[in-house]
Length: 306
Image (cartoon, rainbow, N blue to C red; front, side):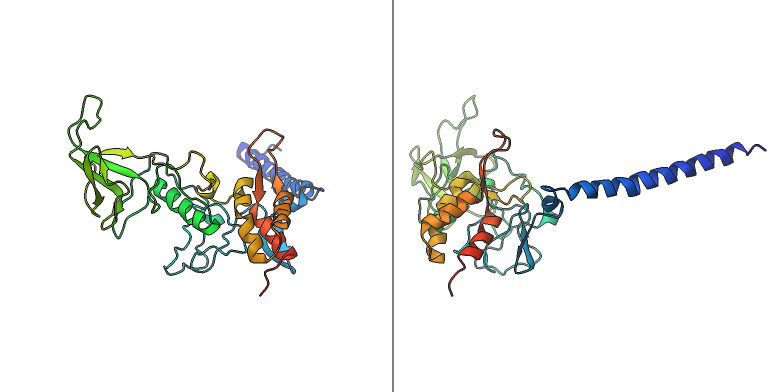
């Protein structure tokens, strides 16, 4: 007895559902789990956890912030690179919710700010440009590590050295004879980083004033072309979760960490080398140091004396 066509179609669909359920819903996941348990893969499949005293204290794959409740760097720890997931608490301001911290995996993202983002929005609801963020971070790190934190296109007080120049313009769009000059990122009553520009007195910026009509002129200044504070110390990674810093940034912090922990700096430098990885396959990426793993090792070997 022949079954109706519609019944045969439904039975064929049911058989396909059962076959693919077993194949893709059971056998394939079991095969993936089995492969993940192979030597060399098990740790990564389990989240590359870092444990201390039977407790999970981090992951080798995700960075952490090593700061106090007010956002001040803890001197006994190597500091990570900035994270754009959620801003770190600012010194002097109320600490955020404990769940709202930098390196939050649920907020993985970049800042989406580019190299042309050089003008701050001044005022109570203002925002910092990427340039000013870099300048402020470099200045703070220089003070923390006791080195020159100056960089090109940054003012001594840690904001972007950018002028807004007003006056008649030539055919190329440049101001030919300045009539007014404003230090765009230095809000009054700040003293402008330049006294004059092409014979015109430089003014501080009045919050809320529209300076869009002026020509934007970044000023390089006299900072060295190769700053003491490395680039990765002042810029966030694309994911905002990078647990690595450059060997140069690690070495910059070594003296402070050794001093705080009361150990010779040579021991700390050895720990840096032990947690350093070279370029993948010998040519991809850059040498790097896992700062989370490094700090955990230091806590284990050289705990802070209280």
